[in-house]
Image (cartoon, rainbow, N blue to C red):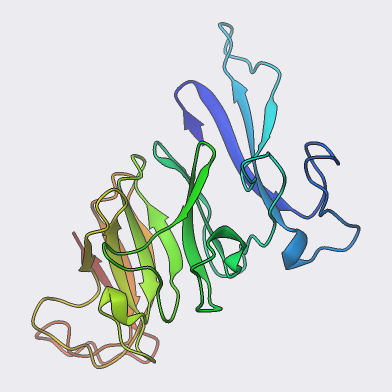
Length: 219
């Protein structure tokens, strides 16, 4: 990703990539507990080339030590102006996390916080991070959690304001109870549009009548 005159690449690994003293949970065998998120970054120089790159450990505590437990199997990791979005099922990032499920997190500077709706301390079913716009002001989650307005067994796509915690449903129009689940979504660079796949048959007047789900666009 080319942002602000720099080439940026997010990657995850169980290796002690920055410094063994900082990342002491690395090992020769990849495990979820040892997996951390890093940012590789190189500024463009005047000749159009790249300067010497830097590598930053994103999933670090206040002392700069690696926390691990990054999950990229079922969720995206995304760079934005607001910070880096990623996912983890570990309570190591938030001691109020009691759902033992995947949660979406935002690393901004030295602070790492869970994406939660205003007034909530947890999500009973967790949430999968789907994406965010370049500004990072809004993020998209796939979740069954009641705190977001979801229902167990029927995950839907929700949009959350990362500043206020305000939440609205993306995959279910207002006043409708979807008869099936949303599966996935792709988010535009502006963060204003989401293309999502849903198995529901009652989101529009026309019955999609498809077995693998239908594609919808929401703004």
